[in-house]
Length: 371
Image (cartoon, rainbow, N blue to C red):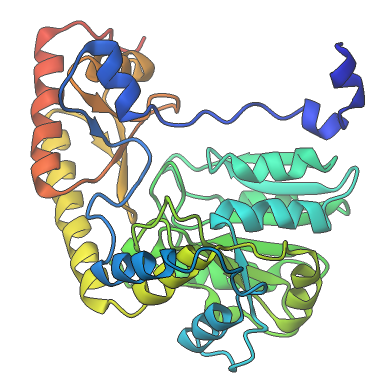
């Protein structure tokens, strides 16, 4: 162990490094390509609301002035949108969804506390737990790649402090029925915090997949995570938020970093919330793209799980990492570090280009099949 490792908390020593998606620039340079489709990081390929861009450009002229230290105006606007009072005291602003996940670990997880979630899911949950000395309890997803609510409930012990439910789930794209999730939330013992990560839920068009914001009440330790990174196309701005009862809010707001969001970011997301046309067109574009890619991949013999997000999870029958590596040579970046391929839905032009590249790579026969 090096000298610096001896000074580091055990929780930090135990967490693996995050594996980000490959950048378009790195793939262009490696393979000498002029064009690259980066469909690995679930970014909104429809861009950013024009209203948000205009607001951010204007705010940039005032970048010398500190922003609202507690994001009061944004908190009030979000609270009103979801039916809370105008105090803003049901809303926490964070640096993307990851910011609130880290904060929850910092505030609530202590040595030996257990955090339960299904596997595979978003890796930030485990990091927030381990960094603070907690114990991760992983419950496998079902054969249908769904969060196993019964399995999670059976895994609860006297040491359980927190449960994370990613709905819809990343990387599988699947979602649990809203009535089943409601029943689960109210069945969990009151001394356990249930966190539902809804980063992708706006893309869900199935009426059985609904937000759990309606279940927030004074007698339920429920936290809902949302973000401006996906639907609003503002992943580079890094603003997320979470909704909860006022008691939970009081604790978390004390621990939240002052000036958590900059002036430019705040102006952008406030304006983005008002651009219903951009939101509506994005949801419809993703829906159409999801149907198109699902159909095309299914015709190739791939198993594609029903997605409620802006990405697909698919079993090609080929070795997942090898397939991703081969596709990169032709300028297509997808995720290849899960059991199956995770593919971001792009614009229809991008989707068609992606399918063409996939067909070409498969026809060449250089990717080994799974054993």
